[in-house]
Image (cartoon, rainbow, N blue to C red):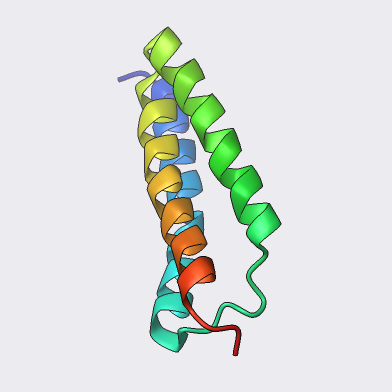
Length: 86
């Protein structure tokens, strides 16, 4: 693996974990008051587009990162729609 692939995988990893603290916080607190549904729908839409792009070009860092972000954004959307606004 050359240095540019390491940079790509590192960027993908860091992008992937950006939503982990938010998912954990919402899960523990069951509070979604400050969670923007519009933002989460935009994130979800963008990850689908990035996934299509990554699959089309066989770019594994893009596929893995956006697949993980897609799952996390689905979780946050689910939380937003099911937890009470408290």
